[in-house]
Length: 399
Image (cartoon, rainbow, N blue to C red; front, top):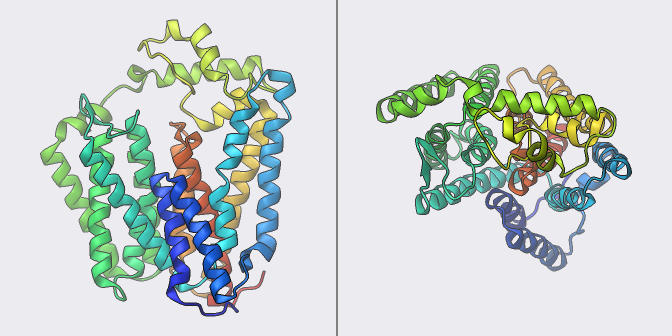
């Protein structure tokens, strides 16, 4: 049983969530230092209960397998180990959640507010730098897909919280619902078809969880909001929708990039061409024949094919092992929860939808490897472990 603590103990977690949402190393460091100070002042252990759970040890084992499989091919493919060390450094949010979190209802409410503030920050920086190229919104990012990817990963958690807290924190739910509507509008403005598909899938899964919860009112409200947003967008910006959805996918070079990626995988199936070398190989061998004349491309726009190309079957095996393990744990624990409580609405479902969105978004974009996206992904996995630990007490589940 986790001992009750004052609300100020949730402040480090709030700062940690915001730090990942806004990609701020300063805020992340501040969150950890504040955690240390609070533990010293209240004479609490620095390391939280998640650190001692079996699921953390197993997760850590799969993470080590993933990185080991990425390092093994390096002596054979002239890869760049500095990139792998950079990816390892982005594990920090996961480790900090394990250390800092004391799973309780306060933890998830704090997390929800943190994602809401992260969305507000994204709105502000987009408003300050509303960069457009043609009909696509870039904002302050180098690609519209970066903005779209961040939004579709955060949206499932904010919408889940709107339903979860609509009775207990009605005003906050209205504000976060408004933020979610703005975020959906921005996703459409980016013109990212991949983001459209990812959000639609996660939205229907969210609707299914709401249906299981037997919350007909929330289901009607969420559906009505989505319909209103679609009608509003179709009226205000029909050109964005028609150009992006109606466009032949070959016109943006995606098919060619995948073909190039498959060719590279066939030539270097076991150890790949080396981490960080895809862009160079593409420029030397494939760029000139690109039907859309795309230059300086660094990936086949598919994270699974990207890993296969750069680290071969060895690297892809570790990558898929980690993803499959995570999905298996989420689905398995959700099944156990629903076997115990048929009308449950656990936070594991909301956070799990964000993890699922990362996997789906990766099929047609490679923003997973960016600092911001990767930190959010690792943070979400740490929060999933937090939600699993909390569910054990809430629903009376065993390890």
